[in-house]
Length: 233
Image (cartoon, rainbow, N blue to C red; front, top):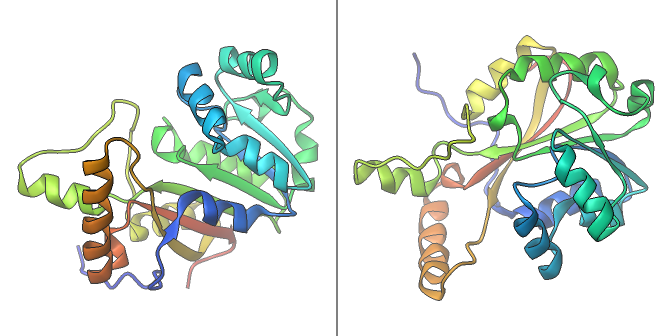
């Protein structure tokens, strides 16, 4: 056990969608876990114009989404004419409903809000190592266990959780995990997710986010890990 400075972090805090779009614009992208939780949430996001997979599709040279939820893949095709998502378990690329040899043609692998849901993260990383190009840039977005809301909840003897998550990662635990499978972290982006429900909550979140993230970007809501093949020094 050791106490170590968060070396990866800069001082800038990024907004989720704006950051992702700046990273993938005019690139070829594979989007893991792209569907979303349910049809109502998809409809709401599409209506408001921030359904991530559609936005990413519109600004990239080519994009293919891969997801486990066959029902919602079909729903997106039938109701919203979104046809660039195929079935697949990201822990096993052999299940992908596409020619997996073509994965090496893509420049970016986008994995937002997914790794914390998996049963076996190592299997996903092993699949990436085998089937993607060594030059691929990998972006993994996941909750920060030290986010300011978790910090406040701890003081109140509470825990923020979801039944869908199986794991959380600090920057160092992510570094260790990736290193075991032959990947390195090139950069970590602290990410903010503005709250949308209720004017009081929105206001309180803006104020508290500014205070905590002024103290340290280590209180950000999420971390975006920019990764590539290789070893962390």
